[in-house]
Length: 493
Image 1 (cartoon, rainbow, N blue to C red):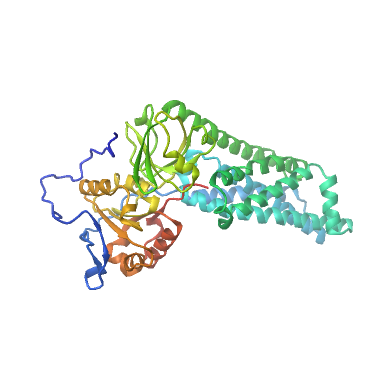
Image 2: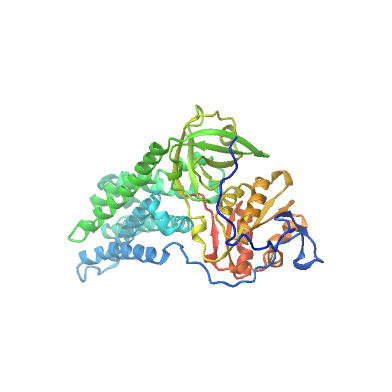
């Protein structure tokens, strides 16, 4: 049987100091108590009074990345300006076609950037951060659809006015007679399809693996649309364009090959992962211990996730993102799974020695992203996995709030309380249905302040169901916790 964690770092600098918190429970189920200070019974942790300056921030270099993006966008649009003679726009058709060309250039550039963000190349995520990449990916996806639609409308309408024909007739003529227009039409259809299945309501109804496979057809959009861009793109050639577009394409292709092929192959050849043991943790929850070679060189941190593909007879074709539920060590890697479907339920039956293919690690949900001296970790449901791992790397006076519906759903309780004792931290469980007084009070300003009076002086790490995370973020903003101190764990896009 594998030990649950390995951490030999001392908690205090001076062991001879007395424990001022002796007798105060490190882990406790707290309930609403309106008459008590703070409004909770059993809240326990003393308020830290030191006001030391924050640690050095290591958040993503968002500003520089945004400036680089807009500089590239401006360059792609400037290619039209360099190739357009003064006075070339003298009537409505020429104006419409000019707007169509500009939206086409912008759409082509955004498509390249989207594929660069999907490449999974590790340096990009480390530089920007997973949360920002996810938000930008969604925003750029919507922008891409709008730009492509505008490009089609303005170009077709401009040609129709020039030829003095109907818009529908002109559009059909262009599809059937212009070079590579049929493939461009298919690419547009795929782009719209990808956008539709990425809407949250539609995505929630699709099996994850099917959605992920369909989402990868974005690469076909580039392949099918590139011929049209070369054949019809009046501003894709010239002194500057001959350098800009091939250079951008080479960068994206190199990133995709590196992130999707070279890095995963190297990771798995070096570590040779396989299942060591599957251990039940609670209701529908189990941990998978994974053996491998040179695990001390695995470039993973507590709080990160990896994509795991277990090479069983019926499941080898599926891969899913699972967070590490313990800080990496030289003996094993552990991930903890809550069975929510057929594939995850089958993982509990895996035999020892099952080969594993992994990709990653991904995410910046790590202790290295802290900006303050103290931290608050909030978990709900399966979100306890990365939170439990993070506790190993957090500073003294960290507070963990663990939300569950029933006591038997509390996973890692013994580990959490043992770690809290060793790390000088505190664990508070909020148990009950969403309509019970305690859970209702938790994500109110008074309720959260009653548990964590200095919340706006802490980094806050959130992981759990979308409803829990949204409620917590809203409450934290009411309490004037800056966004820079809030760390979310979006698995991937």
